[in-house]
Length: 338
Image (cartoon, rainbow, N blue to C red; front, top):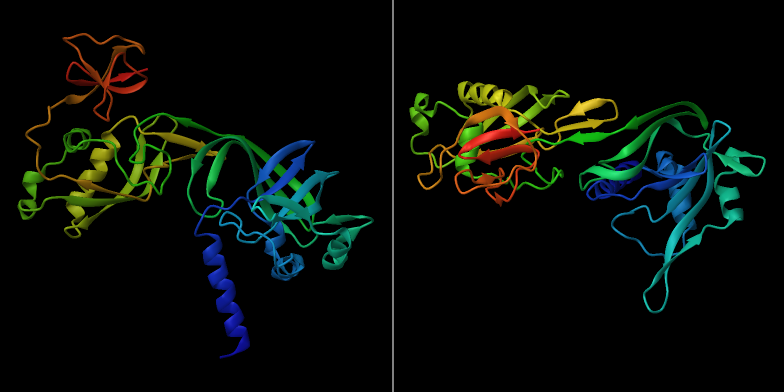
């Protein structure tokens, strides 16, 4: 087999391994403040990456959250991106790990074309890097797919900083299929009866579904606005088979529901926990579950106490002592508590 083909396949497989699990990324200092750099700028140049990995002793420790085996430390000073050091992990005889730096003379050899005086400028880098700090708002167990309260998109042109955009991200509470906020978690915390109430369908129009135990829908291209409304989505019926009429009815039913969880991430409203989601819908009405009225917006306040005549539940079916912000089931009715 051609040597170039073998190398190409190896690099492809390595990239798959990298993004098969969450990665730590690098560290960057901006105006003296430490940020997480969600990526590895050294790895954008395959030659530099290969030379750095070759400089790491074979006895180093590799962890699944850092398949490259090294962590680079960066800083932005005088509108330039500098590489300050590169560290890797070593293990002691009692299996404790500690960090060790690649020697300066080794870095001088690897990055000899990018030195300005005694400092390494990221002259090979052209494009954007994303830096973050604060609480994590969203996490997906692959690559650098996560978001934090504070993020900046830094534009780099051969080592020179040409722009910085700062964002303060947040989440507005509401319903999502993924209540935990992680798209790899596929458990939905609502009962079949609640699901039917939230997204009512005229199943009598589809006699071919009479003997089906479940219908499986897939949601894509979901868009939400800042108020928690689902303004658009595309729905497909995966099981028992494609049904465009049923899919269109589910899409309209979902758009009529309110409120959905809204994630404001880097300048846009995202339907995290809704977009690219597969869920089952029961085509029958469970006889053992209580029926609820449609959601009503009434003057209810957070902290309202439960009474024997007006029991309070959340959407997970758990009884509450007092009402909470969001959708509550109070006295058999779904009520929005603001």
